[in-house]
Amino acid sequence: MLAAVGLVAISYVLPVAAMAMTRLSPSAWETGSWAEVAGLLGGPLLRIALVLGGLMSAFGMFNALVMSYSRLPYAMAQDGMLPRIFARVTQRAQVPWVSIVVLAAGWALCLGFGFERLLTLDVLIYGASLLLEFLALAVLRVTEPSLPRPFKVPGGLFGAIFAGVLPTLLLVLAIVLGEHERILGMNSLWLGVFLVAAGFVAYGIDVALRPVRRLPPSMDV
Image (cartoon, rainbow, N blue to C red; front, side):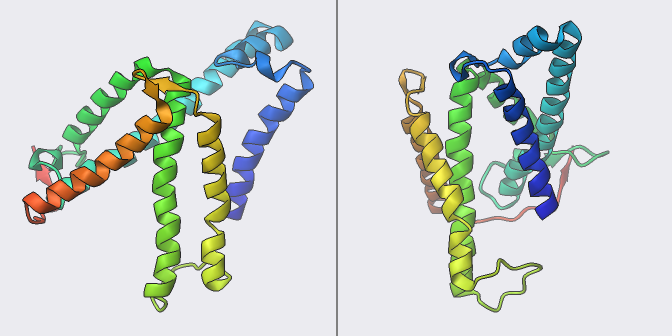
């Protein structure tokens, strides 16, 4: 895990270091600037190589996210939190195809927002889910101290709390820096807060209106 963190850090540090060596003003960097600067410094071959590398990276990440995120509506349908149709899977590969189609439609509708606005929403919503995980880490140290764990954050309760402090500060900084972005005529920060709050409201309505019903592991089509 430590080696993976180091590799991720290097993958971010190297491009920033390369950018610093160009002596270009940070204000000149916008969406798509990497390809333009690569063309200026290394010619058309470097520009094409950078674009192809970005495409492969984006495709790999998107493919992984589709495989993981599509399982969320599928699992929620099994627990009775979403309509049963989301639990339908293909016979051959057990793929939750209804969930993938619905998510793909939602992602397609978001394409018009632009990269910066989508990034602001992603940081806020995904960051909020991470904060819940860090909160659960600390709470479980108190409520379930003897729970079997494959690995454990050292430092006791202080270590569990401290593990979430720096990510929380980074999330707050990202929110403050992205406060000027606007989506659908409103501040993107408040739109993200609205979306997060809507999730709590939807969950409360679901719990109040119907009991939890577990479905079989799969619903083949």
